[in-house]
Length: 401
Length: 208
Image (tube, each protein chain N blue to C red):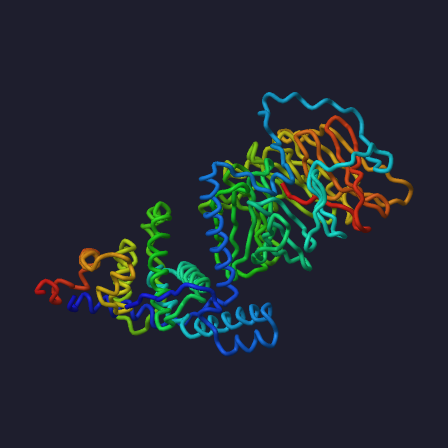
């Protein structure tokens, strides 16, 4: 190729474009973060190949926790929840005691992970921990800053990811999504727990770490709702489907999502007197409000999407003294629970709630100076999980679904 | 050539520096592993500091925007980092990074073609303001960005990196003939897209 005038012009154009660029935006930390991700992808791809050959892919961790499918029966064939009249009192001291837990619990004083199959000692305290591939993925917290960690089946830390805004699990336990700060931007990953490659990385525009992206929950098999704080307190919600994050209007801050129905619940207004919430259609993209309420904050959909937990909107720092299970389609209360309290006794229900199945939820209750894990049935039953914690901190739910 | 030589074996086998030997004696194997990691990070950091700005320019010309350039370079550096212990020919590092960026960009483009085809009505990011530009360079750069990825890679490697056709063929993993045909098509495309003010036909192209 001997140069022609056009080639000379191209040469000049490229050099003129590039010459003024004196950018070196990456740090070694950025590069190491990306390198870890590449290594994980390679390992995942290798694992998937092996699984394909064996035609069997049962992760050890999944077997240990046994997250039974939550919604095997289609909603249409499920019987309506039995009507419960009046308010059901939650008195952990007098409630029937069950000796196992239907959902994984974390004992921060152990630290340990307690499942229906036994207790596992953790290398450190995890805010969230769930089975992933042949091990686990979890989030540790340090002064409000989360870090993603990947662990072996024996709960030894295998790999540390970057800063994270959290980790959510699909109701059937087959998929996880987490956010991760790469050093220059936030990204959201979605992956199948049992195998296959981490199939999606959603990249937000470059920005500082304090513009944190937090996954809220799955809104379909391949879409997850996330929220991003712009660093000044303003939160924007997005539906992320593997291509680009699409802004979800209608809510001020998303709090829960249902892959069964596509509904997203969250706060629409917040003042010193309290807050209002609404349920919107998360798949339509227009933020159409299905119903709203100023009586409750909305926190967690049942796996089948038919019910939604409402806590008292102005619940104080100790949590809400009442809990309502609402009809997710209309907002009408189905069952009301209230923590029994003695005179001058502080009580409250933690807002991290897990559904054991479509008719049972598991909550952490503060009662005086003690903490209890309690199972609440839509039929009005109240049972206390009789597993002792190693210290005064009590047990808490290990996953966000 | 821009090829990189990798050799088999772990870090001890290749690095085996005097520092490492003395570390093992003084602190044992565990500390030696940590020191080896520190040495690797220090070496890698030094390379990044020295070469990031130059490689970023290439990344920008390939990607066409800063976000894409940053992503390409981060990915290439990460892959280099993972292979760092197996790199014997440190003179060839830039070539290795370029090769990853070019192939990744072509691959990324393929994966995202649907999205990009919807945005072809929008002029690509113009990047920098060049005070010496008479306008033709900026226009030509805009047209370079509309080329298909492989043609664009050839153009960037040939006229920015000034690699030979054989070197470009090696980077892209194609034959020299393919490089020639891609370059020819790219230049033809630029002529077709170029405004009349560039007057490419009147500047001697046709005579050659």
